[in-house]
Structure formats: C-alpha cells, structure tokens
Amino acid sequence: MNLQQSLLQEHSKANTLAIARQILAGVFTFEELWELIKNGEPPLPQRASWVLDAVTGEAPESLLPYLPEAVALLRQPNHNAVYRNLLKALERTALPEELQGEVYDYCLNQLLNPKALPAIQAFSMSLAVKIADGIPELQEELALVIESQMEFNTAAYKARGRRILTLLRKN
Image (cartoon, rainbow, N blue to C red; front, side, top):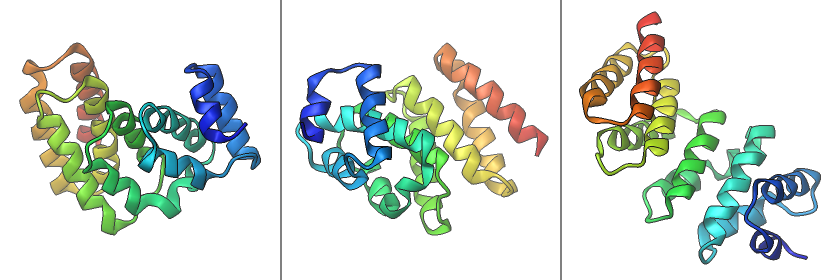
C-alpha cells in the first residue's frame, strides 16, 4: 500500500499516528508526504497535514528543507486543517530569520481576521510570540493586537490570549 492509499484508508488519529511512525521509520518518505500536502486532491492535503503534525512532533527538523515552501503554502488557498497543522509544525521548527517576518505578518493577520477559525488564531498567537521573543517592538505590537481583539473573540481566543499576554509581560 502506498502513502496515498494509507491516507485514504481511514480518517482517524490511530491511522494518522501509524502513518507518521511509518514515515519516521523510512517506509514512506517525508518528501512523499510533502508532495501530497502541496499537490494532492482533497482530502489528501488535510489528512497529510495531520500526519505532518505528528511527524514534526517527533522530528521537527524534518520540515527544515521545506520551510520556504511551507511558508508559501500559508499564502495559498487551502483547507483550514492544512493551515492549522502547518502553523503547529512551524511553531516546533527553528525558523530562519529571513522567513520570520513573513510568518509573523501572517500570524498577525489571522489574529485580526474575524473569520479566522479559533484554532488557527490560537496557533498564530503561539507562533507569533515565539518569533517575537527577544524583540521588544514585536512583543509590544503582538500584545496590542491580542488586547484589541479580546472582547470580540471566542473563549478559546481569550484563554490563549491571556496566556500569551502573561508571557509577553514577563519579558
């Protein structure tokens, strides 16, 4: 069975984790997974991105060769699951400085977007605070954006926002 067939076989956490273990063991390659995220027909990109989340949870460095493409995927129309899982994977990975500005801007835009899903906003907050670490100007900007959106947003946004604001105030 190939990777595509495995992804389509069953949409479950157990199958996702099994496929991730196969990628980590070399049964399937990370490149095969990445191609399905970028170019697969739905529902392959969203299922493959869930596997990406599991793989980068164990081996965050596996995304390093694909970082420019991952950031470019954030700008393209995609299923919300792809954005959510990409943000989680990017948060685990050491982003090179040349990509940080673009990712930070994307995250702020998601925080200001009233149509963005709460999970995407939550992961955007976490990734933005990681990028802003040690940069007082970015930390201030992020705090202002989060505070400005607190009263208009979901309980999930408020909970993550309070946690991130506490982190920002410690720095």
